[in-house]
Length: 246
Ligand code: 13P
View (cartoon, rainbow, N blue to C red):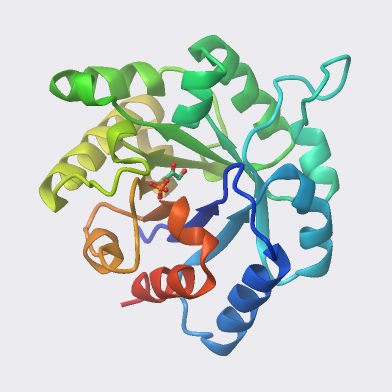
């Protein structure tokens, strides 16, 4: 079965002087290079989402998080319903930075997954071990994946394997290690969703750049990349997109 390939930009809370310039460059690049077989998704900060998703209809946009309720007295939060209503089709859930700083629990993440699915958003669910958990990586991945409800529309589910120690560090696991982790994740998903798991794309994230992207995206069990720092630079990000089609 041929799974969708993705290259997804996670801008996090970084300040880009001219977000339109970056998006404009990516948009033009994609129009020029029609051969791209991957789907490109941009997840800028919430403050840019509405204007960018209205202006660039040829691109897909996503939120970096959503609340576990559709509406209510939750100061500072943005819901899946709101994301959908401004034209976003994707949302990142369970990023390690949120697990770490916002102390997001498995229970809370499950609620977010359910509400995002109800709103028909495509979910990029992030999992990954910390450095001190390397030896028990498989156990950690299994526990994090247990947040996924057993009855779920897997067509809207994408997994991003992001080893916490690789994020923003310039370090990446070896090609073999990434492959092994992805095979493990695939096995867990197979057990959980049986045949329905085959269409779930599994992306790698953590220090992906234009120099290592060909190697990483060339791994058999890797269906794309979730890119942080390198996605803030138009040229760098476009090179990563191009390496996904080789
Ligand atoms: P970097 O690409 O900056 O390491 O970030 C990865 C990440 O966290 C994407 O969600």
